[in-house]
Image (cartoon, rainbow, N blue to C red; front, side):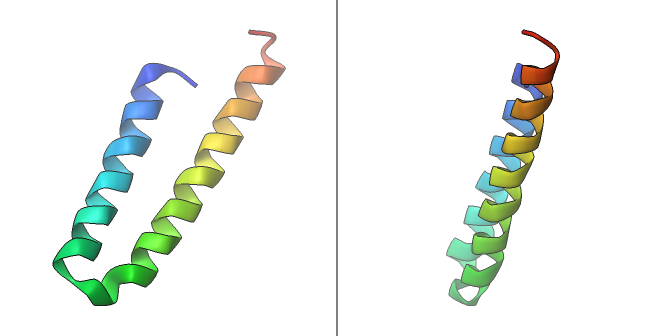
Length: 53
C-alpha cells in the first residue's frame, strides 16, 4: 500500500468519526466504516505482499 492509499483510508475514517461525533446515533456507521477500512487495509497489504516488495 502506498502513502496515498493510506492517507485516503485515514481521511475516510476521520470523516466517519466526525459524522458519529456530530450524531451519536451514527455509531453504527462508525463501526461499519472501521470494518471497511480494516478490510481495505488487509486487501491492499496482501497485494503488496504478492508483488514481492
